[in-house]
Every structure is written in structure tokens, then in C-alpha cells.
Length: 593
Image (cartoon, rainbow, N blue to C red):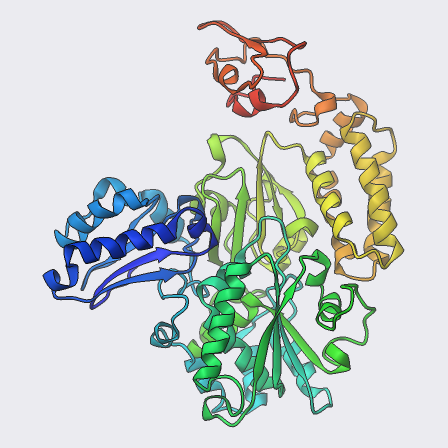
């Protein structure tokens, strides 16, 4: 970071990940140390301890920035309350950074290829302070927008090239124009914050770290389409995000920013939060609207589309959190600035949540067009334990799994679809050589089957049958023709399902068959799992010649089922073995079959 300040600032990550790692205790420790040493009196400067949002490198929490007047920020990671006295005494008072505790080269590599636009205030401002938000360009976007006509605002968004970040990638300005053109004196604006993809937490981090930025983006959208009421549909599993957003909404009402005659600009806009119960299908537009209306979250046929007949039968525009967050920055810096970032088909940046077998998990924001290889290796440090990369699942549970030969695919809508995956909301699950792709397909299909609303037969029954076939294959009971049957059913379900859940649920199966068909055939024909994951197909034996005689498997075994002496090959006693796979997970040499 290049942040400088007139006063002494301590920026502490207090997003969900930071709090789970003890950041609130770190905050208290800094406040106590400042009081103990009388720091403000000694240095003659005000000391600010800011509780910021997520910084991205969640695996290294608690992250703390020390910003001394006129100097760039110095970042510490893995900070504990016990470390705080040393940082205050040596760095804050003596101006000597505690070098051994400063974040290393990996942190700078993590940031080097990122372009943090949406996240530029996350980790910089006090997430709950409207004054801090205003000091960082806050509400200058809406001030600019109201000097234009609603039609000009929509044209500005069209010219920027912004596409919806919720997964479909539909041009945002075009979507707004449809709702604007729909007749009716009452229209609704909805922010979809129902982020249900396993391992994805991009929207949550924006809500926790920059809630006022979302409000501003929604105000611009409401002004453009002629809407006076907006909802933020957020899953109830995000209590901190809901708390901070509600506080921001309340503060905006107190200051006349929301409500009647917003900011004195002559338009009205009210908004509220609707907490969802955690149904994945409610991320789909029509199911989401049904949930807001108090009905069961089930999809509706389209047309009519929400822009024509949406919430309570009124014209409705729906975008996700990241889309509205982008809108604010388009009006801070102009459409041409935004259009200069990214690729021809995908403008701006994209936030990704990286999980799985990767060294540095967390959130990254990169320009569209950055390759998957750069994201995984340059930004996130490569594969955990330096194992061999196998695949990355892009686009959430309905996305495709891409192999090593697709690592140079650009992360934009068109390139990922061509490769057999999709951008989706931005979840990336990285897999190494210990991952069974048949088991991965089974896992994600089970997720979408459970989350199906059950309204249409292809999704309700078809996914169940496909899952039963995959479970048979993983159990060593697969048979000839299963692969072809899975493919035929996948295409039929994609074509005939009512909503996006069913239409995309077969993607993991189709992509894993496309790129890893040999693993399916090994399970079916040889009754063998090449990645040693499917328990019914495991032998649990140490491979002579591959074993490095290190004893790591012995230490990992919870039931003492492995015999080993120093310098000798380990031996698994089958009668004691519980097939827990702890030894396999612990062995870095793939020496256990």
C-alpha cells in the first residue's frame, strides 16, 4: 500500500476473517498501549486505530498497517496482542519497524499484479465511518450523476462497458435501460447479496469493508431508472455484513442522504435489507423476488423478465454487490477510464475468491484479461506443498473444471466460456494431484441437487439420477455406458431446466469428462482411483521405492496402524487401518497407494 497520513494510523483488518483470527483483541491491545505510553502527547500527533474491512490475504490475518506521518504504510501479518507492545515501542515511538514481523515478499507479490479498485477503500477506511468514506471520494459519484439526466447516466454506464458481476455478464447499462423504459409509476431496485457459492466471499467483504460504497452505487442506479425503493437481499449467514450495512443505512437516513429529497438533489430513495434463509436457488432473480414477497424461493418462467414484471408485479432491476460497487467508481473517474481497463469484451476488474490447494488463499482483484496462471502462481504463490497443479474450478458449483493446459485462459466472460467454464460470481477452487475429478464432480452435483428448489422435473429428478451414477462410479460399481449416459442427461437437463441452477448444474460433469475422461474410465474399467481419494477403491499400501522413509505418515496416523523404523520403508497394517487417509494427506511424495 502507498497510504500516507498526517496523523499516526493503525489499520487493522476486522472483516469476518480478521475477527476470527483475533483482530478485535489486537485493536484493544493497540488502544491500551497508546494510552499506557501516552503516545499522542509524546509525538504530538493524533493516533487513530481504524477497524477496516478485508485486506484480501485472509490466510495471514491478523493484518495490521502502521502509517506514520509522511511515510508509506508498513504491513505486519499474523499479529497477535502479545506482539503489539513491541510494535508500539519500536515502530510507533522509535520509528524502527520490527523487521522480523513485517509481511514478507509474498505479501508484495500478492498485491503486485492486482488492481484494487472496488477494494481500494477496504483495508484503508474505517468501515463504519461515514466521514472516512466521504474523505475518500464518498458520494462524489452520485453528486456527479444528478447533474446528468437519467438517460445520460445510463449511457455513461453503457459506454463504460460494465457487465453484471453476478455470473451472467449481461451489460449493466442495457439492463438499466430496459427497466427505465418499462411503464409504471413504481419500480424497484434490488441488490443481490445472496452469495451462496462454496468458498466465495467477495460480496461479503465489500459489504463489511465499504458498505457506503454499495449505497452510493444503488442511489445512482435508482436515479437512472426512476426508482424510489431498493432492497439488499443478503444471506443471514453474513451477520457482520448485515450489521455494518444496516448501520450505514441508518446513518444515511440521519444525514438526509437517503429518504425524501436525497442530499437535496430532488429525488427520493429508500432502502432496506431483506435477510435470506440461505437457499442457494435464491441467488436466481425470480426465486429471490419470490423470497422477498414472502413466498417459497422458487423460480418463475421468463418472460416476462423482471425489468417488465418483477417484484410485486412492478418493473424491477437486479444487480449484485460487485456491480453496484463498480458503478460508484465509474462516476468518480468516468466511463472512458473504466473502459480502458480489462479486455474488449470484459471491462474493469474482477474479484476472485481463491480456496483449495493453494499457498495463499483469500480475495484478489485483477484486471479482466489476467490469465489464470498469473492469478494462481504470481498472485497466490502457487500450489500448496509445491505439488502439481491439476485443475481449477471456476464459476462456483455450476462452473467447469479447467486443466493445466487451460491455465493461460484469460479471466474474462468469453474466454472462460470458450474453455468450458464460466466467470460466475468469482469463486476459484484450486486442485492438485491429490484431487479426484470424479469425486469433485460428485461433490458439486450433490450441492446443486440439495439446493434445487424442486419445481421443474429435469432439475429435481435429473440431478438425482446423475448423482446416483457418480456415486456408483466412486464406489467402484460403475459400468460401461455410464459416461455417455451422464453426458446425454447433462445436455438434456441444461436445455430443459427452468432456471439457471438447473441449466448450469451439469457443467462440472461435462468439463471433468471433457478434460479428465481417463479418470472416469479408470474408476469404471480398472476399479482404480488414480488420485487415491475414493475409499472403496483404495489399497492402503506404501509404494516401495517411492517412499522416502521420512516417517511423516507414522506421525499422522491416529490409530498407530503404520510400522516404521528410521531408514526403513513404512508398512501399513491393514487390520488396524481405518481408511481415514491421514497418512496419504501427510505424505508429500505420493508414496501411499
